[in-house]
Length: 291
Ligand SMILES: [Zn+2]
Image: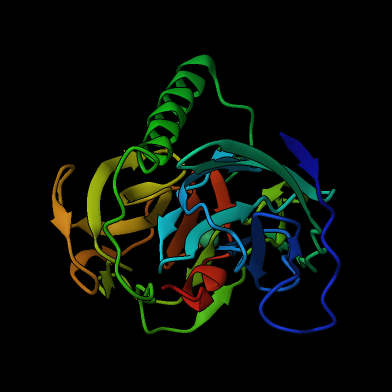
């Protein structure tokens, strides 16, 4: 059976808006999901329901959700809202009961994020059109990175509790800023920059597996960590990498040192948080309520 449900906006209440008919109620936090942020989804079986939920499957913004049981009547999952998402998120959830399967369609409002803009100057070779050999290198590196992001959906959840900052230093550039390189708008800043001097320590945000280590044209020396259940983080522009692909890392473990490798204006850590292929504001990862 297919039902359509449209959520009613909560008036600044927590947790998020919900809709319920017979079956399940879906709540989300934060109550007003914004562009480029993570969302926590809680599916609660209605009190009158006699048939228990065995599993829930579905996608949010094109990325699979990993619902986990969190009590007898509740399942919890996390999803990402892309920074450039311009509409409400519509998604069906397939709810599997002992005796039947039900498909329920939800609609989640997405609120506009306020992103700034900034101008940067870098060496001209980073803004000129790459020649074919360089373009081949960049394409090869971006394919390796794309494979790294997708791996996190195949890995079971390795993180426990909250994610932590990879550095204690000051944040020098927020997530989402539109960037002009030498006067030309090239992209949006889809990470968070931390201040640092060459050699300062960088630590893993949470438990995971090092899925990729590179020395890439744009990213410089970099480490990609798969935390499982869709989550990854990456640490760019290092002077020194202290782990290898395949290594298991623990939250707070030293994985590398601040540097100025790749396309940079000076030493710093560019920190990326991903749900599947979706870049989210790492601050939303740090703030996320984790069961
Ligand atoms: Zn950055």
